[in-house]
Image 1 (spheres, rainbow, N blue to C red):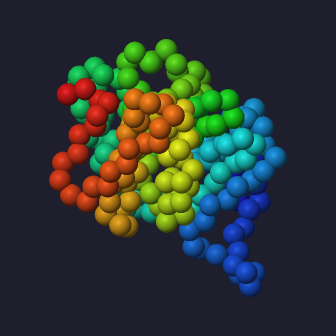
Image 2: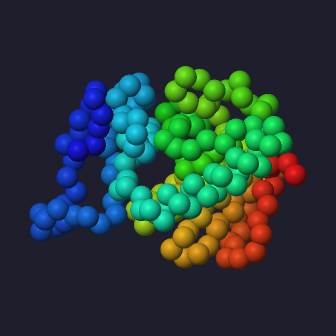
Length: 197
């Protein structure tokens, strides 16, 4: 069951032979409006909305949660101590445009953009987005979200792959029509290009 008090989606993920599956999954549920998404999608579960589809993936593991918690701790300590802005976590929503709402693992909103917060979402491009890749979201995070983040003005996107021990850093070039400049990091120190200091 996916849902909260207002909505119950009876979903069961099964293998081809009909037995229940406990492997990673990514579901696309069609026929939704953005209004329904904000009104009825579960609040305590990552559910994203992309042009009429709800995107739901399997729950993350403990390692994923620990990595998100650690990175949030580091980023929040740095950003808040310098009064640069706010560090938020999903299922907080960043609405890149009407009809495209993602719930990044971590996103940084600079102080000068704090006026873009609404009651239900942050409107526009955060300064930095961090996604910790799960087996069910690898392709989605790298092949779908990365180009959408670039196209809608996110200047820096980190996709951290714990399984492959790699961080894919995507930097938006000055030419907004050009693709992200992508570098892969497996060790060492990495500094954000968009968060001052």
